[in-house]
Image 1 (cartoon, helix red, strand yellow):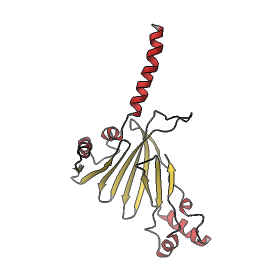
Image 2 (image 1 turned 135 degrees about the horizontal axis):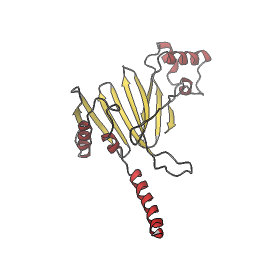
Image 3 (image 1 turned 90 degrees about the vertical axis):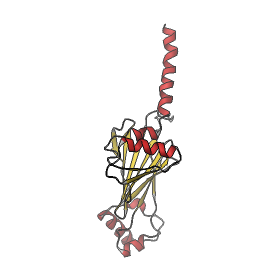
Length: 208
């Protein structure tokens, strides 16, 4: 009996790990609670998945009868157009374990971008059961200014000051790897500061 238990336990653990690694974003999207996507019903989400997997346009009506379109769906990424001024991206990530191997835990990142008209993004992290983990911090303004740019100290200060008055930063989750790219938006800058910033800013890429 003891020998059987010793053999069965590793097999069971391997099965559980495989099941965890096989999780797909479509399943987490279908199970998302209302607070994550408040305007979409579960039927909306299931219909979107069904349409896109059958090579159809994944367009549905939300709770207020507005169009919502699931534009992209892979095993670990999706992108939804939730209105003419907003989008939502989701990315499923398996963090690296302390020993360097792939962890079996799952983190779901949700990036919500609103345009008014300049884009701004908030990114939140959840576990596989949609328990909130944290708000993903955004870069400091100075991180977007290229160190090799020919900006004067005064021009750099102007960019930082104006960006902090109304900090608008667009975030985008990668479809191909576990990164998040932040881009400082200059649409609300004064003309002079925007001209100074053109060609002197860089995106900030962080690994999730």
